[in-house]
Image 1 (tube, rainbow, N blue to C red):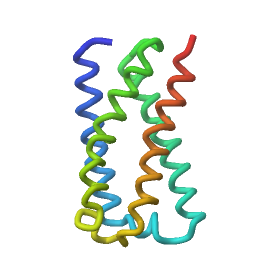
Image 2: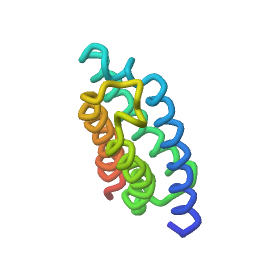
Image 3: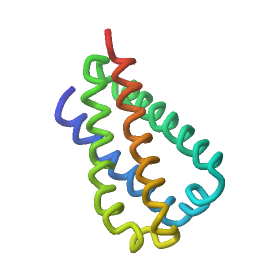
Image 4: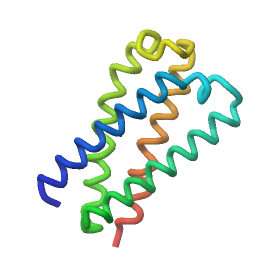
Length: 126
């Protein structure tokens, strides 16, 4: 995997992170403050979607399987780093949600960032 691929994945991930954060900023209370079943459906669906999209990017960019774990880390880290200030200032930034929802949001983020890493690591093994 070359530097151009790494930078491309990182920039693409920042774009996806910004859009996702904006969606949850506007409509997060519907996803996180409703019924527990809705929360878990959202978490599982979004985690699977993230893993599927990551896999699609790897194939689209023709990244060799041996570099998938490195690639998915390039995808996950910008989002994880971007969430630090969001969670630190949760009630100010995500003002449409109750401050107590930060824990649910953090757990959701952990699932969404770790599932693609685990899934693609397993897929990328020879």
